[in-house]
Image (cartoon, rainbow, N blue to C red; front, side, top):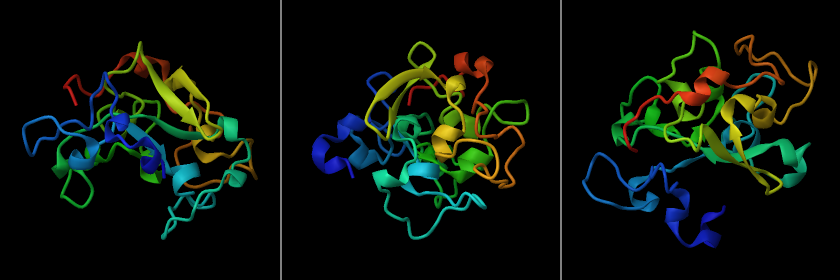
Length: 203
C-alpha cells in the first residue's frame, strides 16, 4: 500500500539494523525488493489482516483495512521495527525452523500466541521478532500508529490492546485460548527483555 509512494525500497531498511540489505543465499548488498526481508513488521492482528477476535484466526482472503475500522487510530499500532533471520530457509513454506524466524515482518496471531513476557516464552523464538529484537535504539523501537504519529518506545510499554485494537475487559476482550497474561492492558514484554536481544549477529 505504501510502496508506490516511497519509490525507494531502502526506506524499509533500518540504518542501524540493516535488515533487508542482505540474505544468506547470495553475498553482497541489495535491497528488500531482492532479499525479501524488511527491518519493519506489520500488525496483521488488528490492522493489515484483522484477526477474528472471537477465535484469533486470520481471515483468508485478507479483508481490506479502512481507517473507520479503528476505534482508536492513535492507539492502534500499524508498523514497528522487527528483527529476525535473513536466511530464506527460515521462512514459512521453505522448511524453516519452528519459530519461522525469517518471517519477522509478520506480527500475526501465531506471533501473538507464542510470544510475551515470562519464562515460558523463548527469547530467541517468536519473542525475537519484537520483544527481544536485535539492534534496538537505546533499548527502544520506533512505532507507527494508524493515525500517522510515530513514537520511540520500550517494547515493555506496548500492550496487547495496541495490536488487537480492543480496549477493555470482556465482552470487549474475548477469550481466544491465548495465555492468561495476554489481557488487553497487559504488556507484550517484560522490562528485563528491553535490554536483551535474541541474537547479536548483524542482520
